[in-house]
Length: 89
Image (cartoon, rainbow, N blue to C red):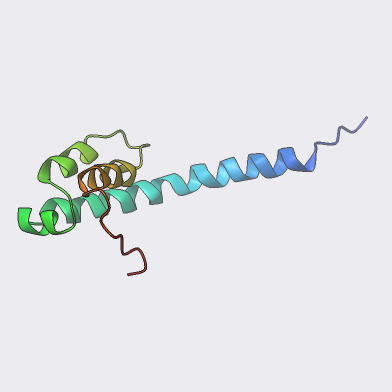
């Protein structure tokens, strides 16, 4: 007797496999970005709303954590209330 696997189970498994295969590339890209931020001066970091400590804390995250989440949260916490956000740029 032939067992038929539901199509959604196959697509879920394929999606999980694809994410696992793409993981090293995502981690590598995040680490390259973190290295670029680490090479910036304090003035440049301040200009984009970050501090040296933010970069250090993001670098200390586990490899499977997205450092951009922490950096965005820190930057948003420092924005003055009611400041216009220019997201289109």
